[in-house]
Length: 310
Image (cartoon, rainbow, N blue to C red):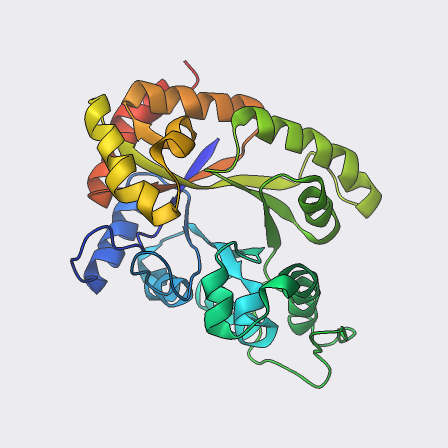
C-alpha cells in the first residue's frame, strides 16, 4: 500500500494562508517518501478553503516525480469545458503526472453558489465525465447530451497524456456508484470517512464482478482511499478534542460519527486501522494532516508506517 498526501487547503484556525508553506509541505512530502499529492474542490465551505486546482498548479515545481491528482474535482460545479482546460494545463505542466478524480460533490452550497440545480447533479455528472473525455480527444467524436455538448470546442494545448489523464470516480460504495465507477472510470476513489475496511472489501468484490462487462481488468483497476485525515496523538482526550473542535465542525460530523474512521489516534491505533485497509485491498491512501502538517507527516513516517502490517 502506497501513501500520498493531500494539500492542506483548509484553514483550521484564523491564520491566513502562507503561499510558501504549500511548497515547503510538498518538498517535505517528497523527501519523506510520499508517492503522490492531491487536492479536492469547494467553492465555499464551513471553513475557509483554498482553491484546489490553483493550489495544485502552484506546487508542481516542488513535487519531483510525485503523482499529482484531484481527489476530487467537482465536474458539475466547474462544468466540463473550464475543468477540462484547467486539468489539461496541469497535466501538461506536470509532464503527464496527473490523474483526475471526479465526483459530483456532497455539499449543496457549492451548487447554490454556481447556480446549478442540486437535483440534477447525478445526470449532469454522468454527462460531464463523457464530455471531459471528448474534450481531451479532439480528433474523436464530440459528445452531445442533454446538459453539455463539446461540438465545435477544441481546447489547445491539450494534456500531455494521449487521450487525456485517467479519470477515477469517487463513490461512497453504493451499488449505483460502483456501477458508475465500472462503466465510466479508470479507478475508484473511496471516501475515507464514509467507509470502513469491511465496506471497502465488499465494494472491491462488487467491482470485480462489474468490470469485465466493460472490458476492464479487475487485477489492474486502481483504487485509493481519500482523504484520510491524520493527527497522531497518544492522549485520547486530546485526540477527541481535535475531532470535536477541528475535524467534526469542518466535515459537519460529530466525533462519534467519525470515531475510528479517521486517523486521529495513537500511532498504534493509526497503524492498526491502515493495516486493515491494506488487507482489504486498498492500493493507496491520501493523508491530510490536521495540525502542523509537516510534523504530522514526520510522525506518520517515523511512528505509524513501521507498524503497518505487523
